[in-house]
Image (cartoon, rainbow, N blue to C red; front, side, top):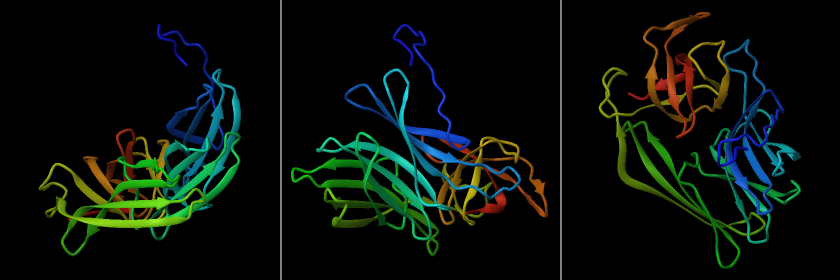
Length: 271
């Protein structure tokens, strides 16, 4: 932590599996802190051999590790989004799960890291940054978010809004999914002829590594699932030969905080 004057009060390193990227911090009432994010073990010999689990830790106000958890299914790519305190002073973790049909899951846990329940909900898409979780007057959780739906027939991506209500045991009460009539993006022929400022692509293999730089020697920062729609913001000037493949590297933007590179063999540019 850093004081208001810029002085470092304490610093700690927390390492579990080899690669950890925190993406959400939740301050507790007693000044303890919950931290969640991606964790993975990278195998640098392969372009395509990593999945992200979720780490969840609690630290004291002085940085001492109070407890730690690794969450998720083996061989499935998962992405934590937020932590929300519940009306009964426990916590709800919301995360995307990228496996076959895209879905998300909720984990309710207490102050000591004990898992009370976890449930998965299929939505055929990924929850986005505008995710909102509220508690109703009856104690149920109300979850709303946008997801994006790709139409290969029309070559467009449109926004879909979901609304889910669950009770305090994680059981689904109501679920609504509304597809917008508005088209967000339209594409033309090639990467060099873009009809809008943003270009999209689709990951065409399971468990594709995203790296910090366009090289196999660069650190793996995330893992993408087959069928995931991604935003392309850059590509290398020249292709790189890897084995029998000869493709460009593409820089993708996952959210406001994370971007990285994947090898073009594993990406279909939407044309």
